[in-house]
Each structure stands twice: as C-alpha cells, then as structure tokens.
Length: 331
Image (cartoon, rainbow, N blue to C red; front, side):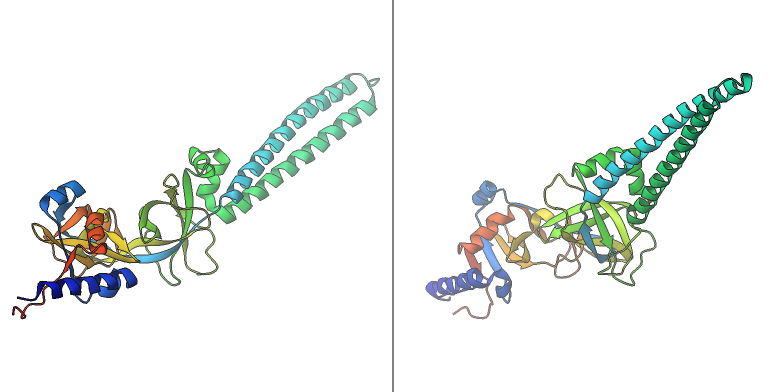
C-alpha cells in the first residue's frame, strides 16, 4: 500500500493548486470527495439520475436590455398630443355652432352685424386649422413611434395598456435580441433563455419584430420581455440570448441546482459510491429550461448531486477531498 502520509501530502499539494489557480486548472485527475451519510443529511445533499433528452439546436444571439426613458417620454408626448387634438375638436365644435348661429341671424335679418358673422367665420377657420395642426403633430408622433418601437409596443403606449405600465415601473424589462449577421430563424420562438451572467439564467417572452437592428451587429432584431422583479438585470446591460433552431441534438439534462461555479468553471458532483462523489466540469453552452443540455462526458442514469453541491465544493476547498486512485501501484 502507498504510504498514508504520501497520499495526504499529495492531497495538500493538490489543494494548493486548487486554491491558487481554481478548480479548472486541476482537471487532469478527477477530484473525489468522501462524505458520510449523516453529514450528507445535515448538508441537504440529494442525488438524482441524469435523464436523456433531445432538444433543438440553439443559436446564441446578442441581447441588450433597453432603457425605457424614450418610451416613457413617448407616452407623455402622446398623451399631450391626444389632449391637444381633443381640445381642438371641442373649440371647433363651439366655434362652428357660433358661426351657424350668426349666419342664420344675418340671413334672417340683414340688420344683424356682418362684422359678427365674419368674426365667427374667422374663429371657426382658425379652430379648423388648429385641429388639423394637432392631428398632424399626433400622426408625426405615431409615425416616429412606429419606426422606433414597432406597432405592438407603440400600441401599448397609445392604449395605456397594463404591460406599458409594468415596463415603466420596471416590473418588466424590454430586451432587444439580435441574431448574428446572416443568421435567420423561420419562426421566432415564443420563449427563449437569456443569460445576464454565467450564474444567472432567465426566461424571456417574444413581443414582436424590432423595426430597427443593432447597428453594431447588423443582424435581424426582435423584442422580448423579461421579468424585472429578480433584480438581476438592468437597463444598458448586454446579455447572451439562446434561441432554439435547427436540427435536434441529444444529451443529458443537468439541473441548474446541480451546478456550482468556481472561478468561472461550472462543476457538478457525480455520485460514485454511497459516501463518495467526484467533481467534474460541464459545458454550459446549451441552456434549456431548468438546466443545461450536456452532449458529452456524461451518461443517462449517472447520479449527480442536485441539492447540496455547494457543501461538497466546500469540502474540496478546505481539503476534505481525496486524490483519485490511478491503480497499478499497490505496494
């Protein structure tokens, strides 16, 4: 058997590598952790088998969380423009009645002042011009809104729809998603995944085609909404967006709860015995609802830690791990 002190010394050296350079620098050999069942129970360690699934290929697009100051200004200006039109209509209605009255009086009795009739006609003509001017200003504002926001979002503003209030109150946020230049999707998905960071994933819902693209990317753009209640995203942030498209691919589903992060590397713990676990890195480039689709390195049926993985990671970082045996050196 190997000298026990030599094994422990090797473990200390490995721990120093992990602490200094991050787990991703030490994946030449698997890192195993031993944890008694009682400790697993106290730490909430729960395992579950990996399941095989098939999912559509995904396109990684570019997302920008939009500032809605312009949309709020649009709402204010549209309310003012609509009020101006209604006010002009009311004034024209009053001046039209007065002009009709003065015209009837003058026709019935020539002694009625021609000056009063002319004045009434002048006021009516002025009010008619003011109404047309107000309507034109409103139409220009509508046209500008359609060019910037499109028919759906502009309609929210013009109707004072509940979703517009949620956007202004930041209960919902608006994300412009732009495909890579030259990329096309025949039908945009109703729901997609966006990643503000490697540790955070949110579902976004389709709104409409964006009338303008992001000039930095020159791809087709679309609007999606995402909940702002999580506090994980802010206006001005750039996010990664993942859209299902193309042929289906197979793999295993790794739940989000199974993934822990160490210096930018995603890890999961695979159960190799009743009290033994092995930390292994995974690729997170195919996010799906509830986790990640992993296409290689894992098999359906392998049990992974889906709760309490952070407890095992802590064991690794404080030295409570064991170097995996290479075999062939029993003496």
